[in-house]
Length: 295
Image (cartoon, rainbow, N blue to C red; front, side, top):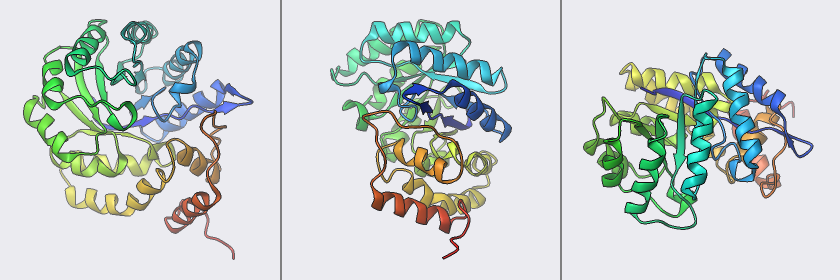
């Protein structure tokens, strides 16, 4: 069962191309800091800008660099079922541990259409984590549909990114927590979700601060919600700051500010507005992520 922190990996670009050497170094950094799950080619990995060949190579790179030391949950979703099937089959063939499959976007299928879509993908044989993020896809998986899908032995959990604790609570009430895992899709909602039975987070902040993100989930998994709440409150301004603009612009910018090589963004993602960059830097300084200003 997946639990704890899984890092939603950035995809570093260099000169317009994917920097696979830097990507592999980022994988090693995450593992060295105790992160047990890696999620390449999701939203944070700028997957909509990758070609199919790049998408496959990024997954292969992360699997190879992880070398069995962390679970790899590969983004394989699409709004075309055949394309999602092909991506999931590829991820299985190269050794990914699970697939993260987003709601079909743009074409706005019905609940029945999404149910049939995910059931076909689950039949590939790779464990599937549903990715419920209506802010990106314009359609949401209803809790009742998630419960139907959870009956499939290969549908093992959901990345819950609706931002609604009522939705998360309803999913929790309909699914067996011993067989189906709910993971937060928002860093700032990790603690509330774990308080009602969630098992962890697919985290953006952990690209920058893996040990801090893990400290929160470790405390919650151990039942120490007093300590988890302290960590949550300490990190909360950072949770919000890394979404001051569209993800992954702020996290890549924050990593670069902290001296980490996050590479370039790929259009249509572009550099942060100056005022947002200043606000992000201020929060990072106030929370010790950057050296104190000499001014």
